[in-house]
Amino acid sequence: NVKNDFFIRNLREPKSAYSKIVMAHSPVLYLPMEMSQEGNTINDWSIYKNDGITSNKKYHSSMLAHGKFGNGLRVSGTSDSSYIYVDDYPKAQFNELTVSAWVIAESRPIWATIIKNWGDLNHGQFHFGLNEDGYLEVEISSLEKENVYLTDPELMPIKKWVHVAFVHNGKELRLSRDGQAVNHSAINGINPNILMRSLGIGSKVSDSDTGIDQGNPGYWDGRLDEVAIFNTALDDEQIKALYDTVASTVQ
Image (tube, rainbow, N blue to C red; front, side, top):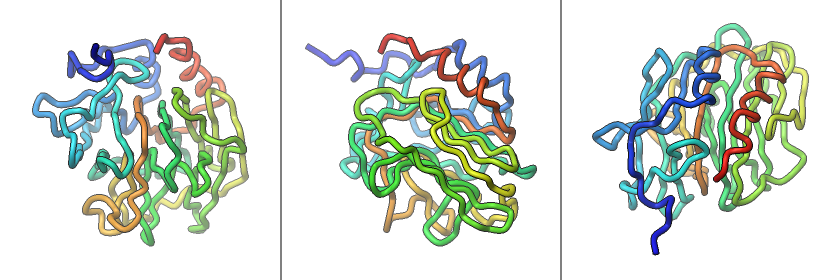
């Protein structure tokens, strides 16, 4: 017997109803987890083409697995140290930002990373993942360089697909899970004057923008799929539409 999700039969990611919605909102980064033919990058479907560099120290050939739709990224915490590194991407300049992804958590590592433009001491624009207690959390650097954070009041579910997102519209920060807002807070804009260029997906980037923070990497344990960044503020109905499009997909 073989596991149906262990072998990837096609590196190409088919266009779907979900991807059409994402592309209609003009993402500045969109990774539906389509791997290059060389196997060392994940293709960015946005117009900016900031492809992600893959790193899997022990099991490079098994980074792709069955995703929420098509392929997903398989990462297994510190046991294989897998992640995607994006060298640069267009930052939010006009106080609006949305980040969205589908995730499975196999466990809840401390500070596990979904996607972060955030180092240890050199903070970028946002930090999105789990906190030290296993709750979904987002942290934003405001115009005053104040770090404003929101936490989901419920523990991150284990071993199931969850849609996660946050939206910053310039005055309010909203955190959503499975299409519904779970927390919100007032916030004054986003700090556009940051030094950090890069993104870590599945792990936190280093202060020097040269890869992953080796001291506190915050590896995700599970799967990540359909990671998207928009430099606009999607409204509640648009976030719900992203969830509803594939929420009933058979896994």
